[in-house]
Image (cartoon, rainbow, N blue to C red; front, top):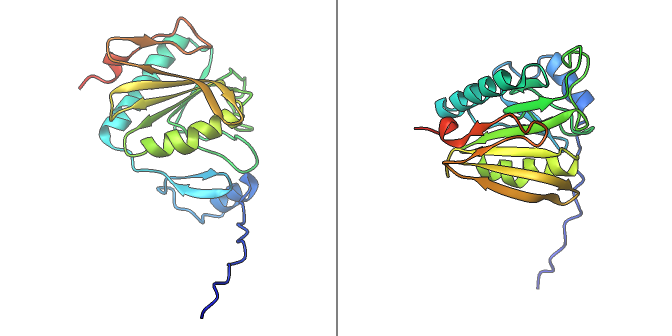
Amino acid sequence: MQVAIAAPPVERFRLSSERYHTMIEKGIFGEDEHIELIEGEIVTMSPIGSEHSGVVDQLSEILVDQLAKRAVVKVQGPIQLDEHSEPEPDIVLSKPRRDYYKRSLPTPADVLLVIEVADSSLAYDRGVKMPLYAQTGIAEAWIVNLIDRWIEVYRDPSPVGYTTTLKILPGRAIAPQAFADVVVVVDTLLSE
């Protein structure tokens, strides 16, 4: 009779943001590699298709036009959530800063809204990124859901996730909590 032996627990090495940046600076990753640091692990990001790209561009234009320098609109750039996570959301609205975050990345205290545009990444964005944004205290996050054709709104962060979620369906509009006068119309954004 063979006795099963339990494998010892495996301890994973968690990469810090500092080491991640050193690896990037040393050229370990190619410029065209779409990666981000999530909880100390380097994660490959889904390729961006034409609809995804177009929606990001359109949303960026809508927000820049309506915000009139009341926020920095960052498109597909990194934010530093903590020592081990540096995701690259599709759009970030952050508090205005004179240096436009040239000296350091926006942190959760700077972020007013995070927006992910999702098709093939939908399950990952819901199951990994939304809880991570909530745990670090980002007040509001959206998923522009290209599969179901609606906008998912996540508000009221807690250590276990967002406590308020809304679906903004076609025929409706939504405004970020931080800017009640900034209107995003679902039909305009997700028209075929």
